[in-house]
Image (cartoon, rainbow, N blue to C red; front, top):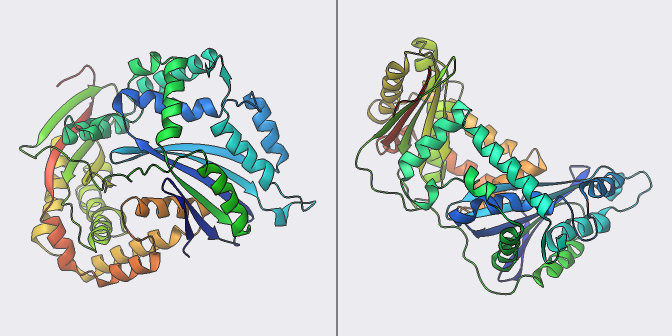
Length: 427
């Protein structure tokens, strides 16, 4: 299952997937722009403000009413960090004309609403409305501030900053609460014009519509994006040299501690690198026989939960554990021993088989939902890898336990963060 790719111009491509398995059709616009830390809050606010009203649909209520009339269509957005760039995605999810009661086709109106929200914003005297910007700035500032109260978010964010130092990758995607509060209609309007002028656009369609109909829509968008090439994200941001393990402990009011140990992964252009990362993670964390779960949680009873989170763009492996207060140091030592065992001891055939089955299930499940496959496809595309699942599955089958051990031998611990249950703060 592979989409047909049309290069409309140097800045815009259409990825067309004929998929008749579902009753809905998906049209997504993926915009890639350079990540500028000083403007992070403004870019994060931008899709919220755009979806609050447009020139032809000046209120959220009017937009909601129009979408409801299209058999409950929906427009969503999300923001993703892509190395040295950010990706803003707007997705229109609507019922296919084959399944409407009167056989009416919602495409034209649905596509027009999506176009209008992005390209015909609601301006007053040449800028976004002040009350809308103030409302979204207040909400974003509150969300940034509140996120500090979640132990898992605080622990991961602290570990990322320790590993990434002063690099671009250490800067928060949402910006800071102070920056959010300082947002003005004029500043957001300037960012919007930069966004339209600079964006590399990837149009995604999945459904049973005629290819030429979607291509005509893509060509309409291309007229608004001049043919000035913009490079896709760097494969990996340049992280600071690893000189020592950076450690930090913070105390918060909670009943359970949070532990994060971050490892720098070896970055490689090897054709099987990504598959090796997936297989190593399955042996370590995500398969039914995962060592972290079996050893640290079940055998030693040191934590409530223990799993890994991969950042394959930056090359960071985070191991996250929910720990009984007072057992943080002991749990950290146990986790290190497990990671070292995957470099210096052995992987059983049973572990390897279980891990491969886990990875196969993960890859095949990406085709079970329209949105899941879209996410998988662009994740692979922006890594410079083939999104052909059959090729990836074949590569997984080629890997041996020696590949897992070799990868484990090149992991380097970079940071340890403990968000300890208690009170006050300790640096």
